[in-house]
Figure 1 (cartoon, helix red, strand yellow):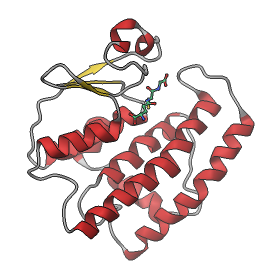
Figure 2: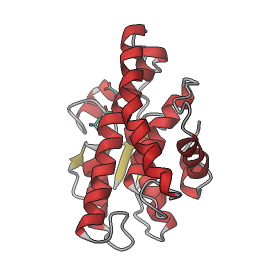
Figure 3: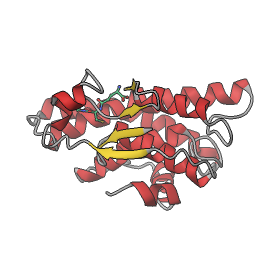
Figure 4: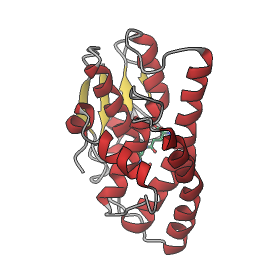
Length: 210
Ligand SMILES: N[C@@H](CCC(=O)N[C@@H](CS)C(=O)NCC(=O)O)C(=O)O
């Protein structure tokens, strides 16, 4: 299999963190990672549009030549394909809660963070938009408060002691925030500690560049 990705972008990065976390658990998926240079616009060229008609990364090329082009679907496919030591484990309630947390992080936080970064200092050259940045920053506050409360019981990671898809998703977006030198934590010491702690994990050391 081949993962078409670019290191800074949050959606590919969350898949890369996910793969690295699984490798730490002893699961070798042998996925070749191939950079699509989005700064040079390669993701909008025919070669990449043939992989993903939406012109985005990531895209996972399966062994039969088909492509998956949604980051969460790629992760869920890899969970199904390599079920030993999967990240999504436990009772239906635990799995439901893990999925819920991942959706909250992705939809309520990663999404405004991405829009914020592009409005402030887009690596893809999108125009600056102060009003949009302020709106996106405001939107981040409730989910950040939610995560700060979650960590209030002393858990080291978002869902306990094991890395989760939500951890990968959050850290991938925070890397983008670091790239534009934005500190989103405010007075949220538990989240700040989580960030520092997650970034010492072997998976994070292997994948994160910022
Ligand atoms: N829903 C898709 C979103 C993919 C996406 O928007 N990727 C960004 C990078 S994080 C991208 O390729 N942006 C370039 C563009 O939209 O032109 C996913 O989760 O994979």
